[in-house]
Length: 83
Image (tube, rainbow, N blue to C red):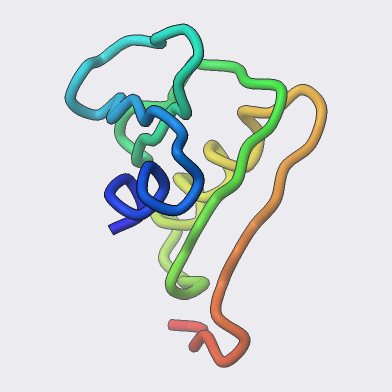
């Protein structure tokens, strides 16, 4: 999992925001689509397994991608299916 790999590889502290429900200074904010509505960040890196045709999943992806006021990155596998 992402939140387990980052401290070991980069030595960064991770805030599992889906558990803590808050921003913690000097930590990497890791969340999911259910816990980012209304929040803003300078940078957002969104990791997705696939791009879906589902309206609700596309709306959630849009919401995640628009949380940044400077730069947003979307990471998907090169061979990601469109479902």
